[in-house]
Length: 553
Image 1: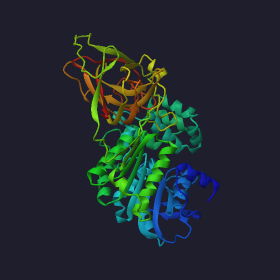
Image 2: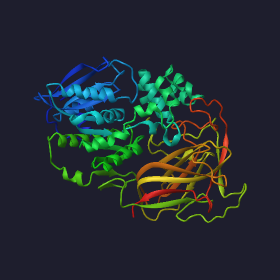
Image 3: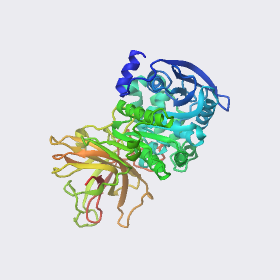
Image 4: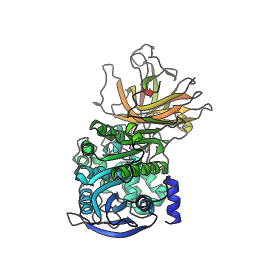
C-alpha cells in the first residue's frame, strides 16, 4: 500500500485494508460485438484467484483519481475491480456517443462472467457519467448483476439537460468542451475558462461550441436540436423506464447525492421507482455539490457496505439500513435524520405567499384586484443582452452550491420577498414547489424562483431553486391574461435557524447555468435576436403567488 493510497483511504474514511497488496493488469483489450476494442485495467487483491468483480466504466480515463479511488481502494477491500474506458475515450476505440452505453456495458458484463477469475457475480460503481453507465447495463445484465453503487447520478440525463424546459448551458457546454478538447480540462478545474465563458455569451448558441472548443461538437449540436420530450435521440439514452426491472431482480442499490447536486431531482425519481417495485435502496443525501469530495467518499463507503452484503463478505450491521435506509444530513446545521423512506412522511406543507410590500406571509393575500394596468404586481425587467446571472446553486463547475446573494439581489432584474425574523427554527425537508402568477408583454419567457436563508447580519444564501420556460400554450394564459407558472424546485434539507429570515427571489433567468431566454419563440440553437421584455409578478387575492415548503412540525 503506497503513502498516497494510505492518505486516500483515510480521507474517504475506510478502515484498514483487508488486502494491502494489489496487482494491476493494465490495458486489457476486450472486443465488443461490432469489433470495436475497449480497454480496461484490472485490480487484483493479493491471494484472490477467483471471485466477484466490481465494474467501473469511465469516460475520464483510468489513471489518476479514478483508478486510485474506484480501483485500488476497492481492491484493498478484497474485491477484484475492472476499470474500463468507455468507447471513444482514452485508448478505447470507436467514437464517444454520450450516454449511449447499454450495448457496450452489457457486452462487458458477459465478457467478465466468461473469465475463469470471475465467479459470475458482478457489481457496478461510480459517480455521474460512471453512474449512468450502470443504469445502462443493469436491465440486461441478467443474474450476474448483484449490486450497484450509484453516486450523484440518474438513470437518464435528458431532464437535467432541459430543466423546466430550459437548457443547462453551463453544464452542457463545459462538459462537451472538456470531452472534445482534453487540453481544456485543467483550466476547467481551475475555473480559468476564458474560451468556455466566451461560448456562454455566444449568439446564436449553435456557434457556442466553436468558440469554446475551437470546433463544432456533434453531440452538443444534438442537444440543441433534440429538445422535444419524445426525441428518439434521448429515448435511446434513457434507462428510466427499466429501473423497476432492477428492483424486481433483487439487485442491491446504494444511492448517494447532494442537496446541491445537478442530478438530485432525477436521482430521487429513480429511488421512487425502485421503492414502487418493492426495493429498499440505501439513500444518502448531504450538504454537497456534484464535485464535493465528501459525496464521493460517502458514496464509496455506502457502496462497499452494499457490496459486502451482496457478496456475503460481511453481513454485520445490516439491520439498521434495512429498517431506516434513508440517511439525510441537513444543511444549515440541521443535523441528521434516519428515515424509513423518501419523501419524509412526517413533514407538513407550509405556504409562503408573496406580498405587495415585498414580504412573505403564511396568509393568503387579501389585496383586491384593481384590473387593467393596475393589478397588484411587481415590475420585473429582463434584458437578454445583460442576462440575470447565476450565483451558486446546482452547477457542474466550481461556482456551485450555497453562495452570497447580496450582489445579485441588488440588481433591478431580481425581485425579493423577505419574511419576518423567525422565532423558532424552521426545518424544511422534502420536495419544494412554487406557483408564480405572471403578466408579461410576451408569450415566451422564463421564470426563475429561489429560496434563500438570510442571517442576522442580512447575508442571503441560496438554499433551493427552480426554473420554468413558458410558451403560448404551456401552461397557457388564464381568462384575464395572467399565467400561473408552476415550478418544481430542487428538493431541500435545510434548517432556517431562529433569528434568520426566509427570502424568495424571482427573476427571468440564471445565466449561464441556464441559457438566456431571447425574448422570442426562436429555436434553442437558432435565436440570434435578443429582445428585452418586462413582466409583472402578481400577488393579489386572485393571483396568490407562493412557495410551498415541506416543514417538520
